Image (cartoon, rainbow, N blue to C red):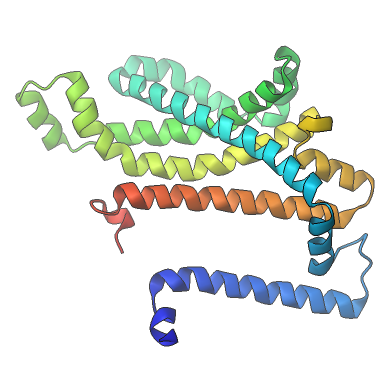
Length: 264
């Protein structure tokens, strides 16, 4: 019963990295316990777990703030990036005019843009959402544009011969063809939205009820509370992993029955 389960590729993809992670945590715990390394230098996994339990209210409240900013930024990036990609595929001139500016925003570090955005936008939450969106929008825009353009020339000629309108070509040919590219962009963009939210929180330094996990990391660093810092980092990592898994599941749901990229 157990052996066939272990031979299942889906189970192996989950069990293999999970087993390795548990082994590394065990080595970390035992080796640091034997060497008596102080907790204010590098905490043991047990110290991090105790900090997460004792500070659960603070940590999960901050996690909700960071997650809210991430999801709002990600949603805005998906909507705006997809709509702009639809415009670009209809006009090479517009794409040539505006794509360099999209690249300019992508290659400019968010830590250089965030102070300006925070000054210009008085609402702190909205400013953080805008900063995170600027980080996350580029993969959606470029991947979707590439997918919309990468249609089979024969199929495109067939649509044109049958006098299909631009709307029909877009919705019945270009959009289905772009879905694998779009979901690839989602998997990249969700992580970038989280990174943008955390970096923006670092720059803003917003405390109080609107304090995210980045603020808790800063405070823990000032107080040399490394278990709390590692606990906040762990929650950020788990959030990023969870977002990636959700996007992968969505890709599997929409593409599994017809596209080779999701077929086992």
